[in-house]
Length: 215
Image (cartoon, rainbow, N blue to C red; front, top):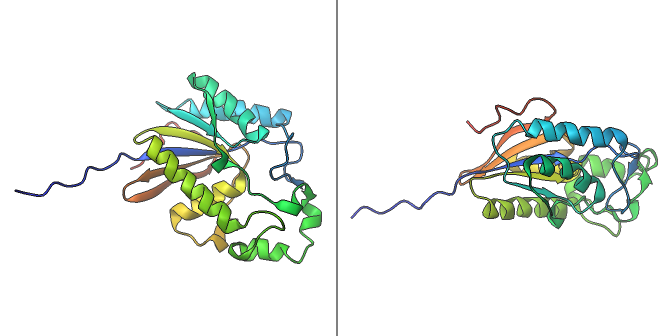
């Protein structure tokens, strides 16, 4: 009697969306500090990305980081589909510890800044999280969400560094090179997770998503 092949699990398409612009984007390292909301431009970006994602035939669930700027970005995406936003701590920003709230201009002058840019896998933010811990967290979150949504399309609203880490993990790129990946506000990065491993479909996309599908 021929042996049966193990049943395959349908791929899960995860649309990683970076939150919209805030009043401090590009100026401050906000981290996990509470109370940072979208700027007017960010709210417009959130509405626009909701329309772009609306071009897809289906979206089965919407998840967001607990931080306000992520939840506010996820809200119009979910509303357009008649869904609710599920808050997932696994999508939260990296914990920048003592660097939280610091000016990017001032932080760039620190000697440690070159380590952040060139050897992030060996850096831990003082009293905060290491990049390795963040990368492990986002990879585990992707695996968990895939397990909950086999064969489905989900949106995961997160932050630049976690999304860059997810892309690096999917591509098999060493974490020390993840700073070469650019993730703009309200861009869409699509990764299909299947039995054969992840397939990166688009990164930092700000255009038409209507034809997005794994080949």
